[in-house]
Image (tube, rainbow, N blue to C red):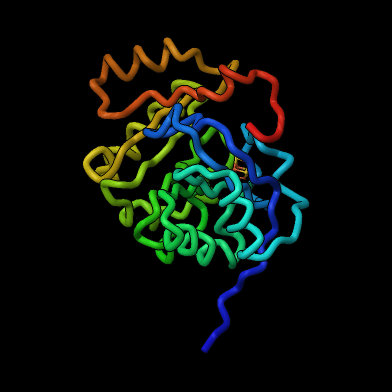
Length: 218
Ligand code: SF4
């Protein structure tokens, strides 16, 4: 039998309010795995792309238990870049948490425990990472999953509309559209969505309103 990897490289584990997705505003424990080589232009967690502290699965579960929150998000970095992430997600589900996974859309999500809510990015052209997308992930999305696109301009919006139609995403899962801060006014994105009757949710990053300074643990 192949041993299940339990070693993890952890950037941080903390309690905060969920800043995005359909759970926005809910208290949530975050497990941020370290490491990512996708290189998005708009990355707001650059500190998590390298480094990390070695922890094993039992240590991570113990820390999450201390935070005493029923909702847990595993994020990064790109969490699925670590072999131990799949076991961590299943262990959190087994421990009774409602588990969210935030992933870049560049790594195969097929092996993720079906109890996990998968929040999958689609990297728009302005991110510089569109060519890294694993498009095979999108047909795997279920009604409990969410897809997130972060837009910087009208070209990204038109790209997003095309992807939504091509993969039938609004029928398949929840669609979240966000705007890059200081690049695309939320009012512009809202107006485009309303004009097109786009079946998507405007994703405003609540944590950046509450805590505008970019810092860890938020
Ligand atoms: S995938 Fe996420 S962590 Fe990696 S570069 Fe892009 S935004 Fe940053």
